[in-house]
Image 1 (cartoon, rainbow, N blue to C red):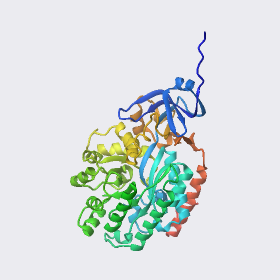
Image 2: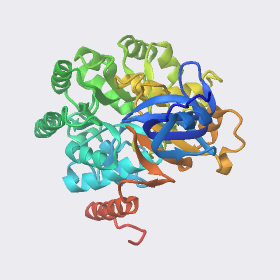
Image 3: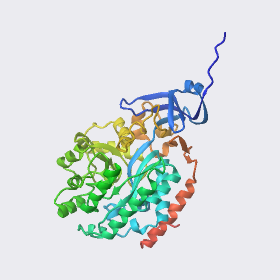
Image 4: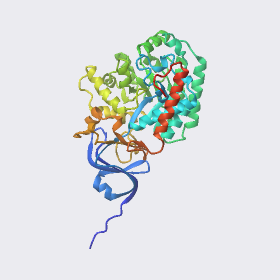
Length: 456
């Protein structure tokens, strides 16, 4: 008597790959693998041939030429600042402290939207599936992220400093700006809380030197009530440390602790100019570093992630405003530890975990994203291993960190939806996104008094 084979189980998406980086704690690498997705969850992972027999998918992506990995988690960005790309890298100051450039209040809501859309598209194109983004016009940031399809944690930039005075290393309050940016941030929270599974409101107090202690304390109280994620800049520059010490008689991390912001829900970009006692305080509160290796290296200094880890800090990775390529950030992060004389204490697997698992944990999504496992949300990336820089493929983690680039990303899935396939977006016109941002950026620089040297 012939046995009857069970009918294949329906699923929404089948993903096939030559190899998969699971990015669990053990560093598991699977070969000739496929996974099934139903809705927004991974429901099966197994050998490719067996999985193909077990499931009847509505859609299939990937091939024996692809390397599969979790989507990257990019924990600190300001997407409208795409406008300054290629214009401020040689100035030496972060954009917020640089007079005469288009930013902040100079941007209309529509201009912020078009620039944020470019930033979101770039991050998606280069393999980020979850991003943290805060700046002026958070409604525009959310609209852009929603159109592109990214999983996003978004907030308004809150600050009450006169930044023209900061450029002279002086503190002067701008109370109107403080009230305006706080109101904008809170209005955004009210509108977007619970509205979308993919967009989560956060709070973005800009930095200890751009916010008064009173404003920081108020933000901390609001965040505590709502148990909200916070994103900020901390110990970014010697100037920040100098201003806070002159104004408050303490170091920036001490101020953040005193006002109630320093804790496990705080993700702090940079964390460079820290003493051992600064790092000890930061780590003792379980706070998270958003490591910015590319941008900080361009300004001549990079934080010691090993020292921060030893102090108890949690490490995540980001691109900030330099580029949306987390592969570049991973490569620079591992190089920076070696340039600092810390030897080979950070491995490729470590850096991949910073860019996936650790970012997920910082956002309260540990086990949900940043890992390939049954039950996790289907946020994943496929790299095309036929590219010359991804051959020969012998062992995945080292190849990805030391050789891959965002340009190798072929397919991106966010929450079970295929948003990029064959390097092209599936739900929006990428060429239109780029052209619209180019046009608005040109206009902003002309308004700022800078005549573009490249023709339109």
